[in-house]
Amino acid sequence: MSAAQAQLRVQQMLHAPLLPTLMRLATPNVMGLFAMTIVIGYDGYILGRLGADALAGIALVFPLSMLMIQMSAGGIGGATTAAVARALGAGRSEDASRLAQQALFIALALAVLFMVALLGFGRGIFGGMGGRGAALDAALAYSNVLFSGAVIMWFTNVLAAVVRGAGNMLLPSLLLLGTAVLHLALCPLLVFGWGPVPGLGIAGAALSTLLVNGASAVVMLAYLLKRDGAVQLQRAPWRLNKPLLRDILRVGLPASLSPVISNASIAVATAFVGSFGTAALAGYGVAARLEYILVPIAFGFGTALTAMVATNMGAGQSARAVRVAWVGGGVVAAITGLIGVTTALAPSLWMGLFTTDAEVLAMGATYLHIVGGCYAFFGLGLALFFASQGAGRMFWPLAGSVARLVILVVGGWLCVRVFQTPASGLFAVVAFSLVVYGSTIAVAIKLGSWTR
Image (tube, rainbow, N blue to C red; front, side, top):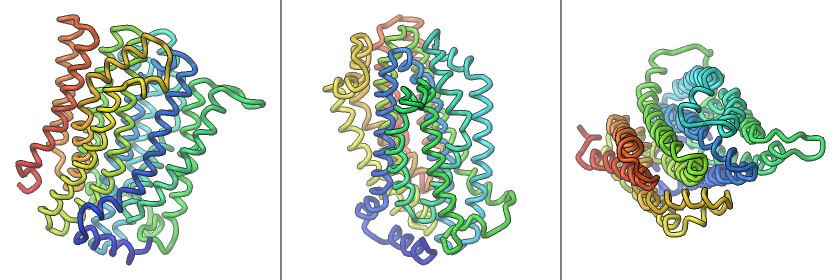
């Protein structure tokens, strides 16, 4: 996309009708991330063929793998999109290119951090989350492969963020669709094997993820090396630039803390559920996997919200920026709420895709009966998180995430250690934490937190 086309997109975000503009920007993202949604569910289906221990193992890894994805795509990625879009909107195309370089420096540093932490301390981390025996072995088999390629995951998501910041929402979405199709074929091949290809078990799913993401990263890198693009990675020499680093990190760091806290909440809940046994952990892992499918839906709209809110706030149109947030938040809440209510009423629609184990099915159904009805609040909070990124106002999204974590820690401890309630009591605490999370951010924006 040329600089002239990028400027036209900025004018549309500033002046065109809100809902049509939001839908036009979000549609490619939602389509691409729908493919990611399919992949999340498909991985659960494939690994479910390996048994309850594999499902329990992947449930242990999922909070940390999703943390990496949310930080790279949503935290640092969202800050990168906003920073690049602001620079292009102000006519600072060279700064936009330099910002892309700084974002990749940040991605490299954080990828190494994830790799060292999970490869060096994975057994202790997953053991502390309740992993035992074969479930712990399965978690390590998947985690060691996935996090050995953390750089691939980080570069893929940050490069996509740069491309979106340059106004091209289509290319990252097409790549998500393409890599999803490739993963659908490659994952079972690597998990089960066929002909001369040996089956790698649960590790094969992680290797497939790395291979398809690596292919996506190569395509986006080639796009950003083009000399006629709005953002050109080779426009300026590669060196650290402290002011531009700060431009990304002042939003990216607090934005990254929110998924850290959110996934800590999932990890805490997982640890408490682990006290009810392997079947409970597997059932919870399958049911809670639905929440990770809601995240891509919110992200699809959220990247458009980040760009629209950032552009309007930069132009001094704060009232329009707030309206953008409410429109986007309402759309995402309606979609996630509908999914939640549907699975609460008919949990077998989801659980039956992954397992036939009666105990696992029963535990997952109990979870969805209680928590599914609160998914609208979860979706609202996620959408307003991305909108707040665009506004550069991250205090209340962080406060909502902290409140969710505190509720889970205190409420979970009371349920498991003090009152020794059945799992349904713990699931009620999870549901309440989602309501508080979404409501905290919404009330803060309603009371004018963006305009003070």
